[in-house]
Amino acid sequence: MADDPDRPRPLWKLALLLYPFAAGAVAINLFLIGLMIQAVGLRALAPAESVIGGIVLGIPAAIRAARWVRGLIDEAEGRQR
Image 1 (spheres, rainbow, N blue to C red):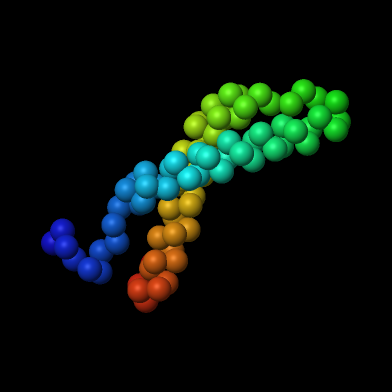
Image 2 (cartoon, one colour):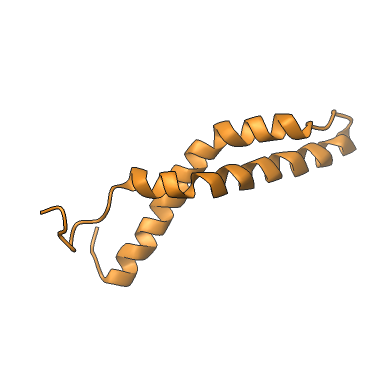
C-alpha cells in the first residue's frame, strides 16, 4: 500500500524539500522591496531583517510552491484531482 503508484506523496514532504528555496526567494524579494520603498521616504530593510522575514514567510511560500508542483506532477502523470 505504501508503494501505490496512484497515490501521490504527502504534500508536507515536498514543501519541506522546497522550503530552503522558497525562504531564500522571499528573503531576496523582501530586501529588494525594502530598497524600493526608500523612494517614498521609508527606511530600507536590513539584510538580517529580510532573512528573518524570509524564514517566517518561507513557510506559506513553500506550501504554495508544493501545491503547484504537485499539480504539475499530477498533470504529467495523468491523474485527476
